[in-house]
Length: 188
Image (cartoon, rainbow, N blue to C red; front, side):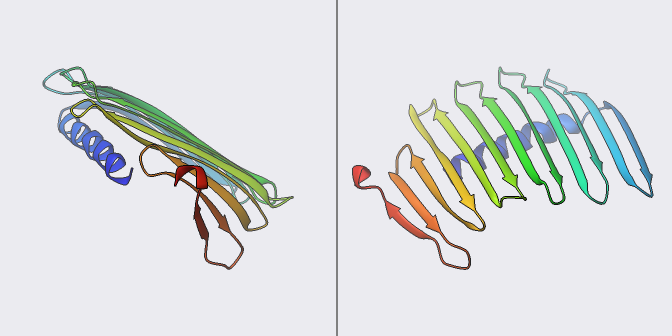
């Protein structure tokens, strides 16, 4: 799956690089004071061959907490498209959360869809993390991907990792210990 994620990321960077080389409209604002800071940014871009990108992001923070997020949408001149967004926040002594989504479609029919979700309760030391990454390569007709579900408490946890093409695994990790990876019997 790592290679598929890299390919999707490199494709997005290439599209954005071509689009960013063109004139654009952008708006930025930032304020800062003794109790914290906040900032927002928005950008709209159009490439010479019809590609577009629009996105916005913002963040607020102080000494004890923070919140940030952003979203984007893009289209390519040959039918490719993408959209995504994410948000994360924390409060000292309370906990943290995060979530993200990414959807990409290539002009040849290849697709990528992924998400992450995480939550941590600092008062109980418990948390969970879930993620999914799924890609379809239209050129060879194959799918690639994985899902993982992790639960943890006070630095110890278990991850269930299910892959499309490489089996399913249970990862048991303890505080200060090396993770123990076991291939699930049903996948052997």
